[in-house]
Length: 403
Ligand SMILES: C[S@@+](CC[C@H](N)C(=O)[O-])C[C@H]1O[C@@H](n2cnc3c(N)ncnc32)[C@H](O)[C@@H]1O
Ligand code: SF4
Image 1 (tube, helix red, strand yellow):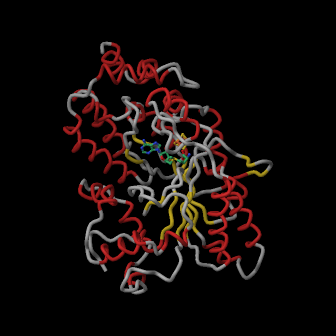
Image 2: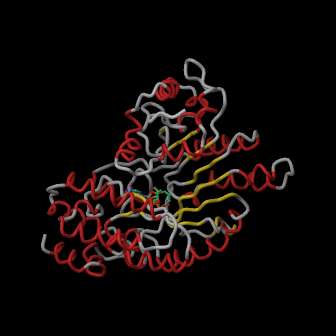
Image 3: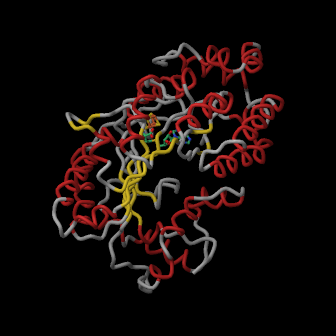
């Protein structure tokens, strides 16, 4: 079946955000009234049965606009990735007339808010470390308390699915997955099952995708790369730039440590790629970024910067035309010339920035600068955004100090 609204996520995927909301997938809109539900409560809920029937009928869901917008801009959407992973005909045949599915989900993505970093692109919806910043800058009293019991319950759902051999994909993000107790419950159970001849091949076939900040090599006294190398793991290392740019963007992380960890992880898990958020600092410092990763080979899986709720200058589309075009033209040229895999999706995002530039007219630069300076006070390893610009892009620095 092909129609341009349907997404396999509604038929195979169980996702809980770091704030324990339910969504069809990580980029869909949160479903009202479904916080902290079990999958049994979610899976054949009114919402999901209705969503399945609408999608089968070719109706576009408002909650899925993120993917449809991407597709309109010529960028590969999560919907298209999901539909590539799961042939839709097989799934749809199993849906009853009222949208019920008897089969359980096979692709899990359960998150936690626990994190050790406060990356500038991120916010209090994803990281516990952002609570104080969001209070100061947004007046938000964010809930960043972990409900360990609920997270454990979710972990047990995955474990039951592994025992029943119904799980085929697991996505680990967060917060920081390497700090998530439930993640380790699942992994240690998988290690046990790996030793059981009835399960060995199955466990090796379960694909696990990680977004990790690469700050952790150990969970308690367990060496993480060696454990994960036993499984079918794809690791996306969130490394936004190198050196000063990295330490500014990945606020709280040290470049020397993460660079070392990247090399160690890569040795144990060949399927390790870099995934940078294509924010303004990363793009302004693209040469050093590309030089470093080209010397280490591999793939990149960079993605669009989604504006967070803070006012800042992380979005390249906010800059004056001359700065924007100089930075984007150079970045496109540099990426076109790379031998790294995955450059096509990065180029798609940069072309999308070009198309969307006119939507970002007349920002209040003075207000944005005030907020940026207030955010600077929380930086762990960098002094200020101004100092970073001075180091990586002189014309933009001159413009910024003149605001
Ligand atoms: C929220 S993080 C959670 C996983 C893990 N802590 C990490 O950093 O990889 C998931 C991904 O979102 C990215 N991210 C953070 N802020 C973003 C933004 N404003 N727009 C797009 N992606 C963002 C991170 O860099 C990371 O690759
Ligand atoms: S490490 Fe990941 S979850 Fe934590 S602050 Fe950074 S992007 Fe957000």
